[in-house]
Image 1 (cartoon, rainbow, N blue to C red):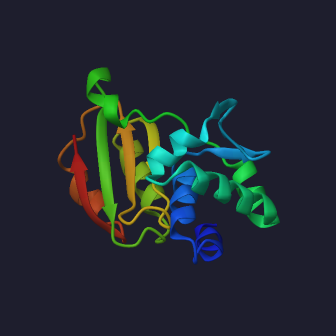
Image 2: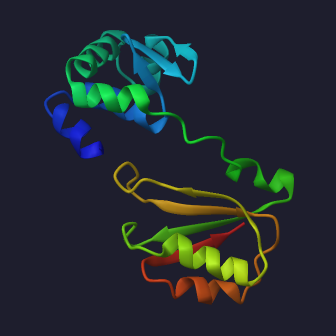
Length: 167
C-alpha cells in the first residue's frame, strides 16, 4: 500500500507528506473532504500537521480522487483504535515494547503471545507498527500483570527480536 502511495506522489514531496499524515492518523477521504470516522477535519488542520499549506492538502485530495487505486485506499482507511500504551501506568497495566530486526519475520507476535499465555499472563492489547510506515517498527503489548524477568530471555530467543523494554 505505502509503495503505491509513495510512487504516485514521488514528484510531489509536499503531497506525500499530506498522504503520510492521513495514513498515519487513519484519516479517510470522501468527496474531497477528510474525515476521522464521521468527523470532518478541516484541510487547514491537516496542513498544520503535515507542515504544508492548505492548497497542498486540497491538491493532494484532488490527486487521490483522480486515481482509482488511491481513492479506494483513502476512502476505506480507518484509525486502528485507541492505544493504552500512554496511559498504561495510570491503569496499573504493564507494557512490553519489542524492537525487531526484521518486522516481516513471521512468529514475533505469536511466539511472544504463547510465552505470555504459558506464564498465565493475559494480553489486554497488542499494537504492531506497519513496517512500511514506521522506520523502526515495534510490537507493543499491554498486559495486566508484571512481567517476570525469566520471560525476557525466552522472548528474546524469537527470531527477529532485537530488544525488549518493559515498563
